[in-house]
Length: 393
Length: 182
Image (tube, rainbow over all chains, first blue to last red; front, top):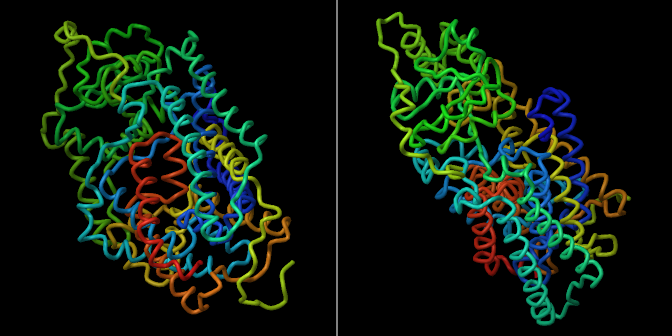
């Protein structure tokens, strides 16, 4: 498990920005070569004469997906460190509908508008101006729609976790679905191009065979990799969410009964101070029965001294949701155990943040004789009920 | 090459040098995979556009922007609105687009529109569509790059819902703006 490189601390923020620029250049170049700097190549998708958008998009998704499935199958990539966008079902459904409408009206989506500007299409610039105004409008109209914006929250849920199957099984299903969609799209294109009196876009048999066959081959390999012993640890993919110290502190005050805290630092360090109610288990501790015995109905929050690179194998056996305290104990010390400074330029948002931090600080430093939230650590009590294996993603 | 003056005519579609869509998809997929393997996260676009808008507005009215419940996540003490991976990634997208168009002989000032669409109508619709997308991308927490493509490959449930909704929205509205394109 050496990938992703950044999560394993291979380089810092500045190098990351440089890498981002290079990756973006590859993306922009390929989008231009796909024809996506020109609106009519994009909107042809919606008039069914050239379904280039669908073909490019699904080929890209499948390539990346089967690549990740294979690399994690052979133990090179830790899928739990791949960021999964959070799901907010209703705003994403409505946002998608509006964005699709905006796409066909303006002729571009946000990324392709940038490529259009780069290739000299002035309408791309106008579309981008619209997006800048739209972004600002959203912020200024945020108040009344905030509750809708947060509705349908399901955290970082993956299709594989939802269905309880390994990622490579979903990857194989997506490959089959994509190839079906490609064949269907080419049929539709032939009908509607003929109707519009245009030549139907054609892909050579060699390319189709090569690409479709390649997808199927890599998907099959990643399924075979499931049988490898190395894959066992990473097959039920865990997506550990991240919590910042302030959010965690709030949750500890509001509902301590919903959390387990696991301190992964060496016992001699932890003895100098832990989060209230934390169980101390050093990462090299192979006694995983502690974690397995914890009831999976609570969320398990793990932390080290600073940011955790990867979850230790033992922790992954926890049956329920896992979250990592961003920044570890250092972040807790800096944000909660240190008295917050009042904001230099007090705006309502900053004052509210300051009040929250002050309240949490006094709550957790124990200055106000407040009882720290007690989390009972009774592994034996839960020993009888074995946590479900492989779920909770 | 760049022409001396904008021509504003509807240019004929240049299909010569376009990649086969499946191959283009594989290349974009490899770029996305590289991003996942190196950084641990994928591509995006609208997030950087929002940061640009918030950054510009912050120059004009810093107090208003900092007091806004939504914009407060981008600006404030110790934060620079443009110091963000996505901003640099989208800068790269622009540079890659320039490189691609220039090397393919496709770089020229023009406006993409159908044979029957007036310039004024085309610009008005580009602005209106952009406005809708700017709002929608914030509501959905991403666009076709960050949600549909990247979240789709990461198998996020919400991203797949979003992707299907984008296609649905496009097909529902396509008929209304047909004369702009066809």
